[in-house]
Image (cartoon, rainbow, N blue to C red; front, top):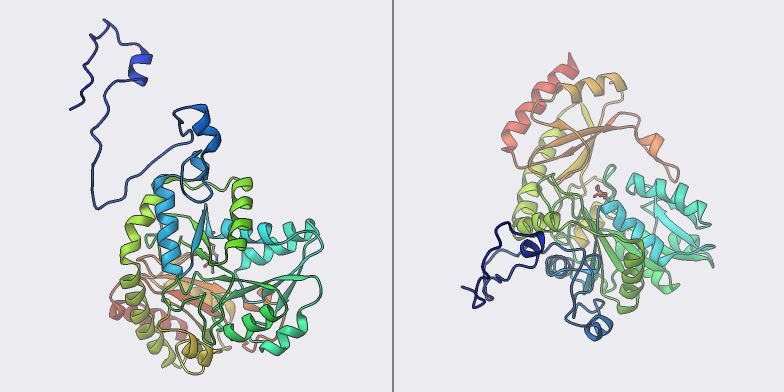
Length: 404
Ligand SMILES: *Cc1c(COP(=O)(O)O)cnc(C)c1O
């Protein structure tokens, strides 16, 4: 289809001929599916174009790390999912949490982190952030706005939030905590992996205020397949976005185009999947709550779960994630044996994929602020997309082994 005539082939083609080949596919290919653009080098028609082009407002391409049509497309779609304006992609959810910390904190600053927050993010504060002279405090996630205000000192710059904590599932009073922080000029960042942009809008919480940055592990629901690691950091605020964007560039946080494509492919079904996970999880959770072996269900959509009233005021849905506390008469080894006895539930970290997952946790070893009320073992479930009745059968047989 090219107008360029083919040159007479040399007897043996040279590598130059194979690299600088005259054939150019016709422009105008249009498909429903986004294209996968892969590049480190991006070429410029001349030096002037190289010098004048910018990537920062997505008006041009300068280098693969600064963005491609594929990565810009996913950033824009995640911004829409989150109700924000700007999104940056990172190679994992944890890398996105690191990006926010590095961009918004410096030596001498203090950051407040919920005690039920994502474990590796707490470890990051204890080790790397502490080593860089950034102090942290772990706060009880169920604090009132007033009590949180009492923790804010003259060096406090950033408040982390997670709603709910992804093991113990307490749902905080997000609106009150955000209002208390904002009143003192403290930036608010939310780990919104659980909400996924679907349960509530992190930039428009009840009461009207919102967080400054919303982070997601796209690894979970947006990917949906258990096969991609990726994170995002989304903002509405131009100044905060610019700080994140420059730190992102200087840190070299690139994502692979094939991974971006995998998320782009899953994203159109994220709302349907989230709803299906939610429905199935509530069915399985209700079953477990009715069992005598279970003393406490930890699922924010259920009355009696910590922060249920905050969930009810904030959310229009829930992720397919919950925990149960078993009766304290079962020692840890018996709780482990119950988990081992499950067949459909696989033992493994992460969540948001089609396969139901289970992990037993030793909560007291994970907490330093506030009380943990329960003596029995905690088991967390991520409900996949299997038939809920089959999951309930599996739990029934494993609970039978617990009793025996
Ligand atoms: C999984 C997870 C992360 C980290 O995501 P990765 O992509 O595994 O690094 C962060 N926060 C929460 C709440 C998560 O569940």
